Image (cartoon, rainbow, N blue to C red; front, side, top):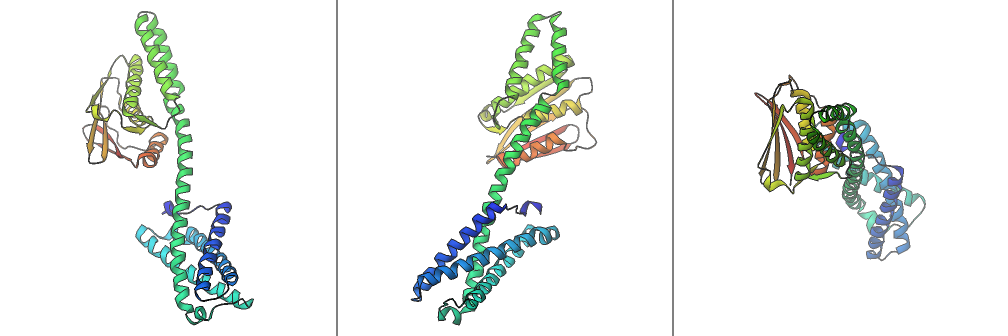
Amino acid sequence: MKKFELHITWKDWIFIIFIAVIFSSLISALIYESFNSSLIDGIINGAILGFCLALFSFSFITINNKFILPRIKSPFVWWIVSAFFSFMAGMTGFFLAFIINRAFNLVIPDKVIERIEFFAIISGILNYIVGLLIYLFVNMKSKKQELEILILESKLLSLNSQLNTHFLFNTINSIIELMKFDTTKAERSLIKLSQFLRKVLKNKDLFTVQEELENVKNYIELENIRYGGLISLKIKNEEEFLNELVPKFSIQLIVENAIKHGFQRKSLNIEIIFEKIDNIMKIYVINDGKIPESINFGTGLSNLSKRMKLLCNGRIEYKTNQKTVFTLIMQK
């Protein structure tokens, strides 16, 4: 249930308190006006109420993060518990504001005193609505910050996994050897390496399928310099998907994973198949290499999984039978 945890900064709390005070002051002023009472009294009482509501909301979120979330497994139960505590925080905040107003002899309309339970319930409902809006606001802000961090991490991981020293040195050494007996092929390989590096350093988070496939083809060709052309690549049904967007290096990373864990110094066949059902695009990356006993999501695959979820509401699935099949699933 960590995904429901709210991380609110002090700047956010100042903003929330300010909004709560303004909102409560306006509502209270309207209520006082309808009861032919002083607008100034309504604004003052509303400001006190807003501060009390923000205080109890702060207490609830703190208790929620530390004591409630760790004990709840079901999102449905969490929403019920949150609604209840938010409602109770609103009612408690109303009664506290009422006590403070009476202690300072501030004017409270008789109709409010006569129907204090009714107004406490209304305050609880409004606090739940406002609390829900605060949750959505903070959650969206947290997702934005998480996305920015993941984008930065993805750039670093891309440089680490795509431009690692072993791959680069091995490729350059292979090209040097190639120059001794086939300068034309060596020159073509240098062009492919240049194209590949240009893609690596491109400042984009999403590629079109066409860009991603070009990158994959360059990568396979460069790897085949080392492995003597033993790696083959087939792509099916890609024509109608060429302009679709996918996370940068998503297909390439799965292909690299297939070579890293499936290649056994004999022919390795990699097949990429595109499929679309309703608004869901599926990309299958299949290889007939060594079948792994288990698939662990290391740094690269874990990072890709997070980027897919945030960038295109997607996920990664895999299965191993006679072949290893990774499926990239994205909402469109």
